[in-house]
Image (cartoon, rainbow, N blue to C red; front, side, top):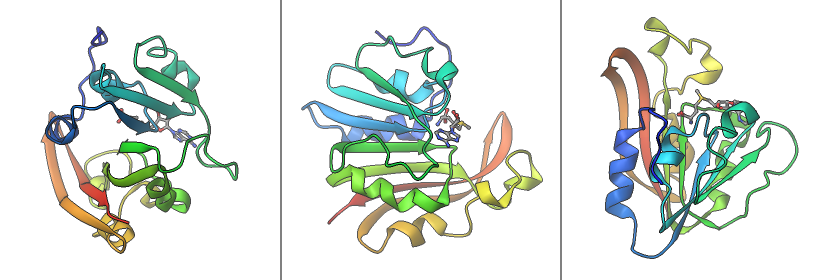
Length: 177
Ligand SMILES: C[S@@+](CC[C@H](N)C(=O)[O-])C[C@H]1O[C@@H](n2cnc3c(N)ncnc32)[C@H](O)[C@@H]1O
């Protein structure tokens, strides 16, 4: 069942996944999934979604959807994430940044899997929240974090005008080893 919840999904990710996704069943992780706008849109017979977030009031809104498994968990403690390693074909992270564990995301991907990352970057503070540098990516930060052992397939850093103005990075990374 597609969503009856009217929430705008992250279009570039949804469109790219349509192009990338093979016919076989794949596992997608929506990391810090919030109200599930992307999970709900992606879930389907060939796309199993694991949606993880610390906010149970958000997760409960879509925990009943077929093909979505929700997990309520604080991703920023010393506890290991309750997620299988080398298991996901695709991970998406949108509007979330926690630097201390960010590189661990790649351990969750299968070799050949894809990480889609979109969040706010420096410059966004001129237009709105977030303004705290802890939540704003630095210049080329996603490339610098992930390019050593992986392939950067696309990268954008700049203004996005979507009703309002924001400044964001968008990066698509393929795990190659
Ligand atoms: C701005 S929302 C983005 C949600 C979703 N990715 C989207 O784009 O719609 C950030 C999400 O991160 C979650 N979050 C923040 N800190 C977290 C933590 N320590 N552990 C798990 N989730 C967290 C919040 O609950 C919130 O749902």
